[in-house]
Image (cartoon, rainbow, N blue to C red; front, top):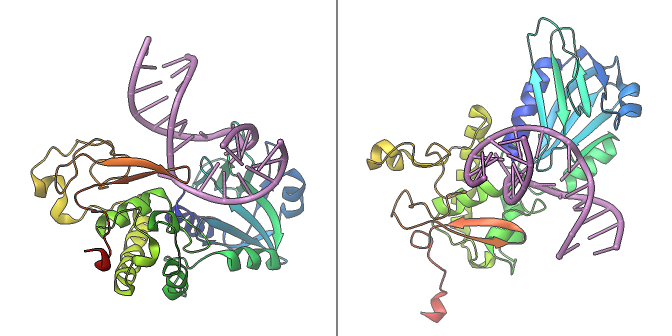
Length: 278
DNA sequence: CTCACATGTTAAG
DNA sequence: TTAACCTGTGAGC
């Protein structure tokens, strides 16, 4: 489930399990073997996330840069009696006597310098999960973009950490059609969206899942079957094509934009018309 | 069981 | 535009 909240949660879990400790580092699968050998037995300082990028810092200003991509997983196991033999394609394993973490299927796993880490961070837009993030930096791009807001929200150079689920849900919560030109948004709208994202994504880190349905629209509040959709009723439109909108009951629509699926409600998220045209 | 598809991104063609 | 990453889930047989 790799949107920004997943990486921030991983950073916290990795730091809690291994921070300040000497760790064994290996690459059972082999593709990270040389770097793993250099790190093996070093002290792991901590782990940090910027958007969907994860960096694990080791002694000597050395960082492992990880990006999970679409199918990557990084499973942290703590308080184990014994560290088990790795199963399957484990690209990276970090372990102590009582904890281990296995990385599989990641698109990036590289040993990098502080400068290389900084360069990746510099390329990223503001991350709603970082306290020092500046939403005005994102607004500068959004307010000048000719592209649909649905495309701009997914651009990691504009905004770091938002993926397809947060995109779909944020636009629904703010009643904005995903194909509306980004530059037609008003500053106040963007401010509200940013504040909402900060809250939603913090919840995402805490719960390790994405929950976006407001209390007034929960199955209980709306008097509908709580098991209507396979996400347990926690999202409004993501992957709910054809199912009734939780607010207006009209079927959820979907389309492909820049190779990714869009989901929206045609009634709750009307197509934008400029004032000049009306 | 096999198959398609997915919360993502880069590099090759 | 396509392949790669090669996991994990759910649908269908």
